[in-house]
Length: 279
Image (cartoon, rainbow, N blue to C red; front, side, top):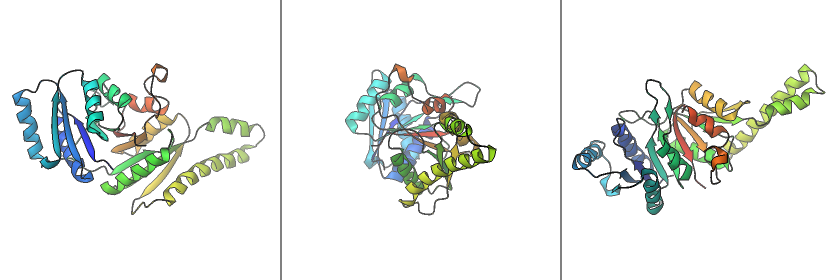
């Protein structure tokens, strides 16, 4: 899936765990690792990073470390483009005493402008662990079918225990309101079931065309605000990874950084988050 993984090294308290996860993903994808730190290349930092790399048995034959000065976001984006990175790994921030993770300004710029997929780790574990409970958003974005396929492929590599495909019903309330003008209560219930059944059938058609191996896959259909429902569902099933499709157009102020569901997801990250930007 990913051949070049960039790692934004910030020397935060979770630096060790993020390097450990980077080493795990390197082995999982047989990928090249590119460590990126924007700041002064102080000797103590270099020694510390080298110790971490050695402790996690990183394949140094597929390792490159880049130290640069300048604006962190713009330099990381520039390096990502130059090195043809296809997955950027970074950590989320935690708000003070609350178990609530969010994106700082640098991370937002990376996600907004990065040409590659981005994996945000909310609370990387030590030692690193595979993603065993994965939610894939099958609702928003162009070519979300591709995101489902890549999410399934990742789940197979991770040997995930449970995979959930989340499908939000667009205009569900409007559909029910229109049907309710001429239907009785029983007929409305049948209409509701029909709408839900159609959505599930659409996802199953996609799944029937691919090799899902021995994965245990469930389809969840929900009405309401897709982003809010997606976030709530991800928390409820205690997923350790949420896979979503990135907006395909150039984001601007009218989008308030992110359109629709993704805004609500980013307000309070429910789990580790993979933003798929693959074409």
